Image (cartoon, rainbow, N blue to C red; front, top):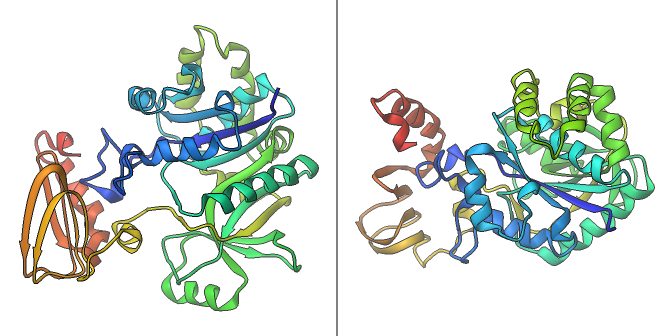
Length: 358
C-alpha cells in the first residue's frame, strides 16, 4: 500500500472575504479566478499528482460536508472528517493523524490548507516529493518557507538556522510582526514566510503531540478504538467539547526541537485578504480587478469589483475601492480599509436576523 497521505484543512469561515465568502459558503468553496474550480477542488487535484485519492483526507466543519461531497466526489465519504466544533488546527490535525495511524503505522503525511493559491505547481510538487523523502529518513517535522517579496504583516515568519542548504533547522517562529519588524526580517535574508504546510511521519508527529500537547494526544488515542464505528460521532463530540483550542504552530511547531524549514518559491499566496487577491488577480489597463458578472468601468482605477455572474455593475469615477456583492448583501468601502471588515461583520451579527447576511 502507498504510505503517502495528505490532510487538507477545510474548516475555515473566510470572514476576511466577506461578503463574497460567508459562513454558509466560505472561500475554500469559491472559484476566485474564474477557472471553473474552487480553491478546494484545485487543492485536491494538485495533491492527487503525488498522493493517491484514497489517501487524501479532508477535515472540515460538519456543516460543510455536503459541499465537499459535491465538489470532490472522488473522495471516500469516510475520508471527509467532520469536526463538531472549531478548535483550531492542532485538534484538526490530531484527528486526521490518528485516523491515518490506525490505517497505516508507517505513513508519511503532508498537511495543506484548502484555500491557498499556488501558481507554480510543478515546483511545488517536486518540493513535496523531496520533503516526503526527507521526513521518511529523518525524525523531523518539515515546514515550507516562502521567500518574502515584501514586509507583509499578515503572515508568520520562520527564521533560518545556520547552514547553506535549502533545508535547514528552524531557529525561531514569529507571528505577524509589525511593519517595522517585518522590514527588518525581509532585509536580513534570514526570515521566510510560514506557508502553513507541514510534512512529517506518523511516528514523529504522534511523538510531538505526546510531548507538547499530551492532553490532545491522550484524547485522540482513546478515541481510536471507535473509529469507523457508529459510536465515533458521539465520542468525537465529547472529545471536541473538552479539547484545547490551539493552533499547531503554537502547540507544537514553536516548542519542538526537530522542526526544519525547506526554503521555496512556487508562487504562493494564502489569499487571506482582498488586498492579496487584488495583487494576484488579472487587471485592466486602469488596474481594476473584476470577478463574476459584467463590470463596466468609466474613469475608474485601482478597484476590486466582485458581483454575481448574472449581474451587471456600472461604475464611474471610483478609485481604490472594493465593491463586493453576494446574494442580498452589498459592500462598498475603500480597499485600503479592509481591516474594518471584522467590525462590519460584528455589527451585522447584532442586527435582527443578521446571521443570514453572514
